[in-house]
Amino acid sequence: MHWEARFRQLSGRQEGVVGIDQLGELGCDGDHWARAKRSGRWIAMSRRVVRRAGLTSTPALRAHAAVLDAGGGAFLHGGSALAWFDLRGFDLARPQVARPRGTTSTPCELAAVHRVRDIDEVDLVVVRGVRTMTPLRAIWSEASRYSDEPSFDRGVVRIGRLLDLANRRDLVRWDELHRSIERLGRRGRAGTRVLRAAAERRRPGTSATESRNEDRFEEVLAEAGAAPMERQVVVGGDRPIGRSDHRDPDHPLVVEVNSLAFHSTPSDQDADEERYAALVAAGFTVVVVWEDALWSNTASVVAAVRAGRRHARRGHPAVVHTVGCPWPYDPDRIVVGADTRRYRG
Image (tube, rainbow, N blue to C red; front, side):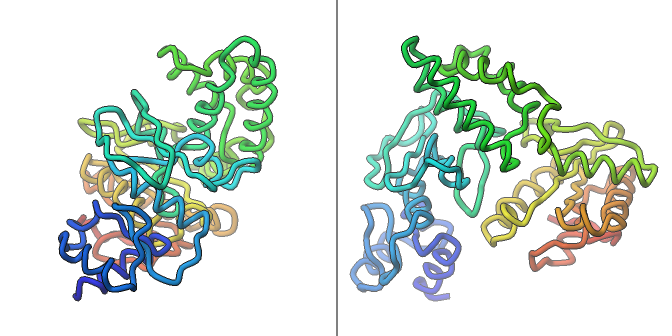
């Protein structure tokens, strides 16, 4: 494939932009980069990012470009992460990104760069092709702005409203909030006192929208007479891979409940399949329950769980989808419904 066709193919998944750090995966080099900029068909946004000519700058384009420009494992930070989740009051006019300490110090022209001393993988997610803090971790960053005594009371009100907004959008759950305080609060992180105060009125189980899909999944299992599963368990092999929505307590089986909002684009598919492949490599079977099936085709959910448990019991790690998967899939790589073909990775 011609180098420019490769540029265009990749940029089609990234709002029209390509980063210099991606040359290797494209099989290209610095000469191709220079030719792209000379051609007039690609416009330099910075030394490290180009975009296809004729494109209008949009928040999505700026988000992709900012993370690519920062490099070094960068991700959307704080208010920019919340803007990426479409939370009111935040925008991507000037993106904020973060890089873990110890990574590249290359100047970034397209975003304000923060350094974070530590970030757990469970606090990061890929949404619409962009690596970003989770909503809850981004709210922690916002809470740190109110750590000093004069702004503390105002911060509790402000962060409380932000938590409620995210909760109504099904982006933050109160049980997750309290677990994060236990995990992150021990590190002396800025904003802990604000989060603790806000969490006092937001106890696990008190939100009407909390864990709606997880509750529904558990209802489906109970109605089918199937054994229950544990919620929100961090899983992995030698290194943690991330937190699963549900984990079978008796077998190496995890369940992921996917919504079309955050799991339908090609970039979402790439990120999810990479995660599923890592879980399979660690010996887990993955059952992917699509939200539509959870509410309108429970037979598919039950069939997928049963198929997944068969694979797990036999020691044959697999990926099993319910109906409703929006991706074009290769039947040699995944199994759908109650199909029994092996995941080959």
